[in-house]
Image (tube, rainbow, N blue to C red):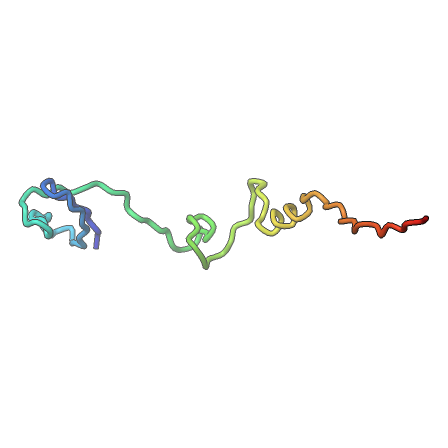
Length: 104
């Protein structure tokens, strides 16, 4: 079933509604009860399944899924971390105050 997005023209409340194609559009705002509701256009979420489609073709979400190789030449996180540790300037060893021998 398609997910439709609506907005009330009176109170500007936005809401979504799962409806069949044959259902009439929503005409009453659930927040304020106004009859001035318009249907918004939004991009549908599409995911192709079956042979010929690869997991790497989809946008990555927070976790899970297979990782695509970096073909754009970007460095991996591990490589960036090791580079950062190597690029730190070397600190000069702290010299302890020399014990002064006083000769008289």
